[in-house]
Structure formats: structure tokens, C-alpha cells
Image 1 (cartoon, rainbow, N blue to C red):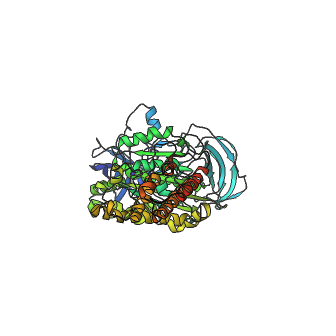
Image 2 (image 1 turned 180 degrees about the vertical axis):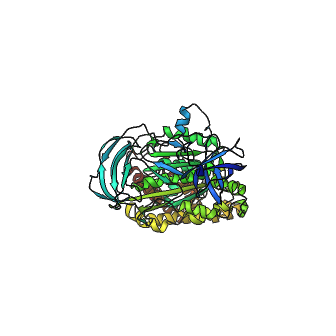
Image 3 (image 1 turned 90 degrees about the vertical axis):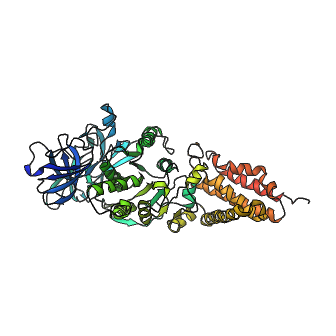
Length: 599
């Protein structure tokens, strides 16, 4: 949070309230104020941000409830833009939309954030063990690693030269420091000494600089079969999950937070219902990182801004989350940011825009909705970060969208789909049939398939791309046949078409359907996914050959090996993947021995 100005502040930085409209406050007298300066409003010193300037009239959006604020109340300008504090101690933390630590509030015994509540985002009393990796006299540039701090057992925090700073390292020493203590200094070309600390500040609306962006060529493996196989997202990519209430957006994002191959997870609960966020906040601290068996929170940051919190802070929470994600990306880590949901964020924009009396766009959303969404998603990417030594990092952004009634033709969904390259279409009808993840395989798409194909061919199998295409083709054929079935019934179909429906059913039920609450089925490695899909498609071909030989479909369906196919997803990988090869061999032997009736 921005520091509160002292009572003896320059009178030019103090104005007074002349109008209040919900979270929007009009102030006069803030001479020299700049756009996006943070101000303190009223006797309680509530945090606000200047979003419009006309002469000395400043329009302020306040991040807290303005009940009780009246004309004549004091408005004090801090002179700083809304910023976040970045340093050791971010991981395992839970913040609100403007980086106020909720654990401090809990320690004070309150259930709700008190207005004007101020607390430092990073514990300035905690001592960190800093190990220097550079020596005084070394030439350094922005982004260079000065040393490391073991922030949690799961992550080594790299202390970086702040952006915009370069020169000669005049002092640096290993030791025990707080985030406020200077650990050294850099002498710039102009001769100025710039102190370096474990923590640094950054304005949330300004993208952190990088050396260059890289093409998306590596998938973000999630362990969710329908995502990794059919609609993958690249590391540094963007994905949208639109869907109606109850279709599983939040559970899907929680699965991604738990299982995705990311070093750091930033989860932004933006305007979601309080009970959903309560579940997240109570469940996450008890989740185990599946790879290290350590608590998942040791590599997670939660930002909670529920629907009953002030609407303006909801708008800020997205920027707070993406800035923290960029900070860990700059260390060379892969970061996954989950935004749940951007629809609530857009609603906050709409409410504030209405109070500003701006000309409304489609469905009352501001005309700049598309630009704001694009600005947010464009901060993703796989990049070469700043620094003399080349390091790569990524921020993958996965945003949930909650269209009213599940209608994805509304403005938020459409503007999101214009800037994201993966569309995971949640389907209420699938959810009603208890098929989870309820992602519709016919409506969803991924524009990364061409970019990621070589990776799958090199790391998994050269057959992968063709297998994926064959499976999708079978599901599309099933959809066409279902239309015929609805007209004439399944009994009227030829045996081969019945076989297509049977194989497609295996893909749907035995492969795509996945339980988030089963200890084994909740995650499938990419190697297990390959062998599962290979087995189903191979058995599909064996089934078609048997049907050509005159074997009846009921006889094929009753084969004992079919039960083993159905149980593949709950077969543990701990003892190796040979069991999947054995199932395929058994299937080949069984089908080879099948004979047509009457022979």
C-alpha cells in the first residue's frame, strides 16, 4: 500500500470533497495532481485513485465503502500511483484487491476489512537470509540477479536489480535483512548511489519491461486430459473459460492451480461469491503440492476480492495479480495466473463508468471494455527477461468468464475471445449429466495446436497429433449420427455406425470424463494420457475389424477387456505404465480370437 501522507503535508496536496456518488468522489483543490495518483479520502483516510482530471477538479474512485463521506471532507494526495510491494514474503500470502494482507486483519479479530485499514503488504519485521551472488565492483544492469533468498521450501527468491537501474555495484553483502534494509547500492553513470533492498515497488497499471517475447512452443501441462490432449494452452499463453453458473469454472481453475506445470500460481478471486472464495481460502492452505508433497500455498499467492467487497477494489485486483505474476516471471519462473472471473471485473468497470456518466457501449459496458481486456491479457507471454545473462520466464493467463445465462454472445465473452487463443467452452447440459470437466469438445478450440505439435511429437509420440485428430473426428461423427438417432432410433443404424457410437462413447466416458475428487483420476501425466487414448483408438479399430468379420456389437461390448478400458483412468501410475501396454496386448489377443456367430 502507498504510505499515508503526514499531517504536515504540502497544502497543494490537500483538497476537499464536493460530490459523492457511491465509490466515485469529486474533489477540488488538488493542485498538481496527476492521473492515477493515490489519495486518502475523509477522516478515515480511505484509499482512492484519481481517474479523471479537469483543472483542479479530480474524480476519484475509492477502493472502500464511502458511507459517511460528505462534501467538505479532506482529500490528501500521496503523489504516488497505485503500486504493489514486491519481495520475499509474497508466497503463501492472502491479499485483498489493493494488496492489504488479510491475515493481519484476521489477527486483529475482524470479519470484515475496516475502512481506512492500512497494513504493510510484506512483513517488515521478518528477517531473511540473503546470499549474494555478485561482488562489489561488478557492472550490473536492470534485471541482473544480485543474490537469493529461500522464500519457501519450494521456491528460491531471486533478488533483482530494479528496472531502470544500471551501473557499478558499489556495495553488496550476504547477511540477514528485513525487506526494508539496504543490502547494497548501485552507482549509476551519473554518479548517483541507488540503494538496493530485498523489496521493490511497481505501479500496477504499468507492464514490467522484458528483453523480448518468444513464440509459444511449449505446452502448459495441466494433467486434465481434455485440456492437454484436445485444447492445450502454451506456457505464456492465454485461455478463457466461459460458462454458466454451476458448470465448473471455479473447480476447473482450482484444478489448474493445483496441477499445472507452473513454478508459481497467482489466484485472483475477482468478485466471486463469498462462499466460493471461502472454500478456496480454506482449502488451498491444506492442499499438497503433488510433486514435492509440500503445502501448495508455498508456491501460491491468493488475491480475494469477493462480490460484497467495494466494487472499485475489484477493478484493481486484476492489475495487482498480473503485476505480482510478472515479478516472479522476471526471476525466470513459469507463472500461472487464474482470474475468476473477468465478468465481475467488467461489471465493476460498468458501474464506475456509469457513475462517471460516460457514454455507455453495448449492454451498458464502457466503450473501452475491449481495450482494457486486451491490455490485461497482453501482459501474458513467454519472454526473455531483463538481465545480462539470458533467462526465460512466462506468465500464462487463464480467465474465467461468467456470461449471464451462459450466453457467450454478450460483450465480455466476445471481447475476451478476440484476445485469447484458447476457448474452453463449459456446457451446462454436460454438467447436468454429471460429466466433468463439463467442457464441450465440439465448441472449444485451441489456436496453439500448430505451435505445440512439434513438442508433442518430440516429447510424447510422433503419433500424438494424428491420434488427437482421429479422436476429434470420431466425436464429430458421433454428433452427426446422434441427429439421425433422434429421428429413426439407434436400431436403424448399420453395425459400423453403431460401432462408431460405441468408440466415441469410450472416448467421452473413459477418457474425457475426469474426477477432480478421485486421488488417482484427478491428474494424468501426458504419458498416461497418450497410452489411454492409444488403447481406446486401437480397440476402436479392432472393433471395426471384428464387425467387418460379422461379430455382433453386443458380443464385443461384453468382453472383459472392455471393463479394463473403463478402469484405466483410475489405474495408478506409481507402478509404471506397463499395465496400459498389457491391456492393449490382451485386447489384441481377445479380438483375434473372436468369431462371427454361426461359425
